[in-house]
Image 1 (spheres, rainbow, N blue to C red):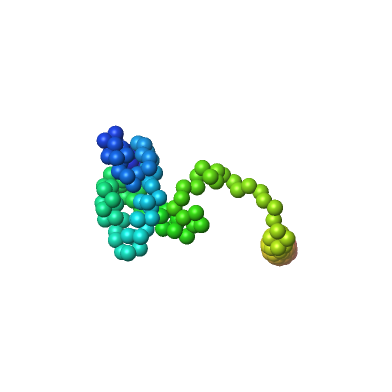
Image 2 (image 1 turned 135 degrees about the vertical axis):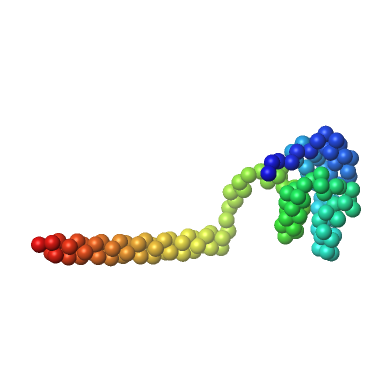
Length: 149
């Protein structure tokens, strides 16, 4: 299944919609108002395609994939602290390093210790299993050499 690009006519229709922030042949950016209204109506039991039609957007122009990803992103953004706000420009990439409180440092170190303890136990079990396998292999080789004499 190929990518779904918007034609010039579709882009113009979408640009004229007050709920669309930006649109190109490949991408579409929705307004916060659309996202909030969409979530409200979705939670009240309406289908995503019905909601978009009510906002003057043809769901067939978007396509199934965009409709599904819009729905899942809006539902996921509901629990974010920023809500539906676009954080791409205000939070580019890796978070900045900040000074940790003593409690946070202690928690991180305790987690690290627990992880290293688990790793040590795992390595001990592997070493033990290797020893057992080598021991069985040597016994098997000794029996084979004894029986061939």
